[in-house]
Amino acid sequence: MTGQLAEISARLGTVKQLDAVVGAMRGMAAARAQQGRNLLPAIRTYAGVVAQALAQALQLLPAGLAAAPVAPGQRGLIVFCAEQGFAGAFTERVLDMLLREGGDSELFLIGSRGAARAAEHGLHPGWTAAMPPHVDGLAGLANRLGDALYTAIHTRALTRIEMLLPDWNPQQGLQVARRPLLPLDPGRFATPHSRNPPLVNLPPAQLVEGLAEEYVHAQLREAVTIAFAAENEARMTMLTAARGNIGRMLEELGMQERQVRQESITAEVVELAGGSRAVAARG
Image (cartoon, rainbow, N blue to C red; front, side, top):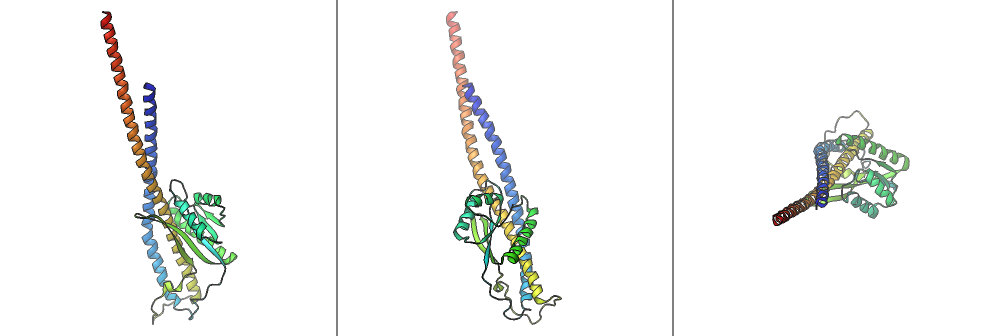
């Protein structure tokens, strides 16, 4: 009985330690998700400002040049997967969509755990990067991703680039969307023609090119931030469920401990009572 009680007490202590670790991990995931979400309004405001400037700059180009047809060529696909574990089916959902719709696209994959899982599926991205652990590193990742994209465009003739972007919805959970990135659709920047075009000190084509690159960078910043927040929200949800299971386990172990302790006390009382009767009988 004493050995059983010691075993249950030891297990109870271990589960309590696990509960503390899971709680800390959940807290970090929640904080990181919130930090990522807090960045999005500013990023989207910036993208809107650049889009407005690009719309005005496009009016300076000769008619038809802004909507030039896209030459056929290799496609690129940016894929956001999980960087760490305990994120449920985050990576699997993205890779399932990639295997269904990826085709022969050149892959740019973000997320170390996702890269490992992609290799297990026989996928070999042309470029990979780790998702930063903190929001401070997201701008740098967007810069490196943009550099890799433009290098591929110039050296391997990529003409169309899309993203498989996971996002987290509180009602529906994880959603993976296919989002176009390049080429930019001039229709997205349509605006009534102004009688007073903006004053510029650059050739219109050069100005449009610079603004287009800035807009693409804003889109990459937004996508990286959404994926960062979504992974942490998925992790937070999984750890919340795990903590619920741990709570139920603690309750069961606590009941077992109390029951075994009570049985041990009862056995000792019975033994003492039996010893008292034996002494009385001898007297």
